[in-house]
Amino acid sequence: MAVIIDTGDEIPEAETPLIDDDVVRGSVDFSGLPPRRSKSGCWKSATFIIGVEVAERFAYYGISSNLISYLTGPLGQSTATAAENVNAWNGAAMLLPLLGAFVADSFWGRYRTIIIASLVYVLGLGLLSVSAALDSLNSKNNANNNSASPLQVTIFFISLYLVALAQGGHKPCVQAFGADQFDEHDEKELKAKHSFFNWWYFSMNGGILVALLVVNYIQENLSWELGFGIPCIVMCFALIVFLMGSTTYRFRMNTDQRNPFVRIGRVFVSAATNRKETKYKFLDKDENVLRDVADAKAIIRLIPIWSSCLVYAIVSAQISTLFTKQGATMDRRITNGGFKIPSASLQSLISVSIITFIPIYDRVLVPVARSITKKPAGISMLQRIGTGVFLSFASMVIAALVEKKRLATAVEYGLVDELIVPMSVWWLAPQYVVN
Image (cartoon, rainbow, N blue to C red; front, side):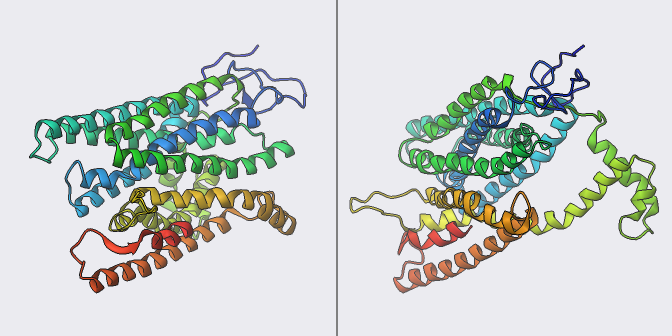
């Protein structure tokens, strides 16, 4: 008899099917029954999930990419204080997925975590619009006072960190839930899964590109409340789209109901008394099951990778702070009529380069690499990460050279203390593209 379950990832049991190639083993459908391959999962489900990710990235970058301009503009903060607040918020947004992953794995499951995170997103974005509206009202009533009211600042930062919290629920769950829709035991679906990650990234950057071009322009030239309100509307629509695909989703059965953080933590606690053993051998003597020990060893091996990726995190932080403020001091006219591109919209060059390169990578480079390495993904994940870290280093070298040129131009024209330097903003293009 099948057990009807809620739609989290913690699936206690399901009906054991007869041998059938159309049945996906290890998963259940929305009703708690073994899913049929022809009616569930793969691209028919992944499309809905990619849709919510595109909207989430649209909303997130619609806020984060131009945040420093809002802080130094309507909120009246100095560049240094604004950069500090942006980096603090970005840091929180990067760490909160650890909390989101813990909650999803231990309590709610990926499906419910995505829904709840989306609702928090809508709340945070809605409050951001309210805080911007308060700024407009305050400006009309106090034409000679440009400082933000305490109420506006309070609502703004509460809503900003609600967005970070919501992003922490989305980030560890959406992509993983999308990967759950592909059966690794089926050769055709396994290849589609590798392609899924490439096209996931392609679509995600499409959403980012639209946010950088459209939302940033609206924020700087029309109104901030509308610039914050549009991402809120988009997230509402994305949640509806995600729920529409519920009956097509596959939900992985979790055969181990123990809290993953607790079971792995016990391995390290128990192993702490055996630290004299070399490398990871002390873990093999732990009383926990072998799988727990293997998971703990895997986490230890990830530490060097995480550490090396800190370099990329430092570079990534410069995109929405240093790079954006560089662009704000340069000549941003792109037409004879004087149309100026918003400095934050220069980040769209990153998305354009990714959107251009991914089809080439997926359709040309991967098949060539696959024929040489015999690996389904073409090259290993570590090789991809290493290439990315190297390119991030190269982008900062380029940024340093451009900044040297910008400062030299300012000195040459005696404009060190001026807002605009007679130097085209397109000098910044290489550092964005390489990044």
